Image: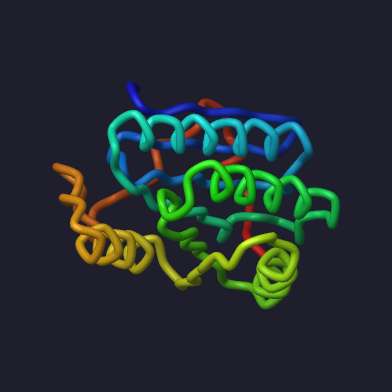
Length: 171
C-alpha cells in the first residue's frame, strides 16, 4: 500500500503511515526495540524533510496502545535526539507529537522525554486514535494547513502489518 511501511523485529511491529501527510501515524505493537525505534525516527526525519520541501507543517501521531512493555530508557534518548534534530534545523515545522496512550507508565516515559529536549516542544496525549486525529486536524487548521483529503478520524484504521503480532495485548 503506497504511503504505508511495515517493520518487524522479533515480536515487535511498527507500521508507519504517511497516506494522510501532513498527518503521519506510527503504530507500535509489542515491545519497542532499538531497531524499530531507529527505523521510526529515520522515517520521522524523512517526513520532516518532506514537510520542508513542501513548505508545510506536520503532526506526528504515535499510537502506543498495543505496546506490551514500557520503552527502555536508552530508547527515550533516540526519540529526544530525533525531535531535537528536527527542531534545530527547522523550528516550528514539527507542530506536535500526539501520543495515543492508555497506561501511566507511558505517560511517565513521555514526561521524561519532554524534560530531556533541548528546546520547548509540545506533546499531547489522547486515549484513542480518533481523538488523536481530531487533535492533529485542529493543529493543522490553526496553522493554516489544509486537512488531508480522505482522512476521517472516525473511520481511520491502522493498515495491518504482514504478520500476526497485531494480536498482542497492550500495556
